[in-house]
Length: 445
Image 1 (cartoon, rainbow, N blue to C red):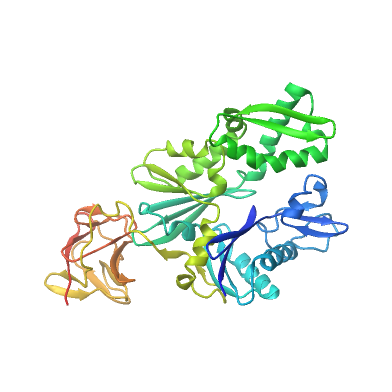
Image 2 (cartoon, rainbow, N blue to C red):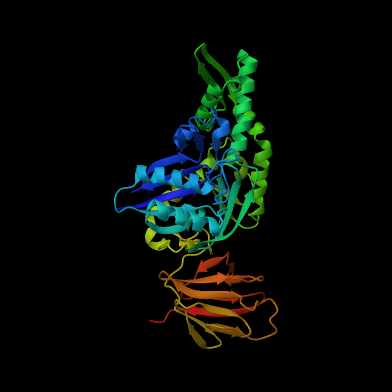
């Protein structure tokens, strides 16, 4: 019995079992007269029968959206069912459970439909987690983390933060900057290079067009280490080749690269040090990582292809049961955030002291701010200038004491600003607001 992590993205279903990637099935279906094909079989014939191909059934997952020609009886949900069933049959054994890693662009009703499809197939679901949070919670990264993933039809940026617990804050989308559009531009680039050199156009015939698209991923991988790549197409009449430079690939994709850069800039403030984690599909795009790394205050890390699915399977105990649908959007970080407060944290604080009165810090959130309110609360007096009504929260979480900032004015530990949240220890001084109030943190045995 094992937990199988399955990342669900329109580009592919990626599955990990016991730490090993066991599937990366393209999100393509072919509504062929001889029967429905999905995954690799469909992708291998997509250019041969383009009118019969469908590739939006995961991005537009719904029961009332239909694929193929008008009159097709197959909905997007039907195609998703067929695709997921094929992958599950290929990777699962008796007693295995699935942990789904879903992109932040997937809506809750679509996640619910996915769970319904899994139930119809007979897949036991052990949990559902945001794919960006799963992929990044194990990184030694900064408190502010961005995750960029390239889908087939859009680019998705997930904004996360937290020193000890990584939480999804929001999701931004570039709706036209997807892999399909870029691959189309690069296929045209290769075709034009071959026409100039050999007068052979690989896009003129379905068989050679299919071969070109099949070989594009390998050419992109080669451009990661080389300034140029030799591209070739085989035909019964012989081979045709040309040389294409990395610069040509990046120029052909400039319109989409610019949208991706704007997307990242929208989620990043230059004055706040940030880690940008590139999903494998984004990291493979020629020169994109270097372009994004040039943005001020941004460090760039590249993730392996199975990062989300692998982490989902490995952390199933934290993610919890997925039925009914409970999408997990926060996970404990494996490493304290790099530079989270610029200090080492000693013994965890058990109490916070204000004006001689000690308040326990435990699993029940303790809100610090102006005025009265429900739940456990430290109410601050004074005019309230520079302090919010619910300014910050103190609590114990997984054996550590943390402060979580909610304010407009800032929360500070030993003079260092809290970016989202930070761990707090005995002897630390907590300043709430500007100029604000100072509270002492202590540990009582």
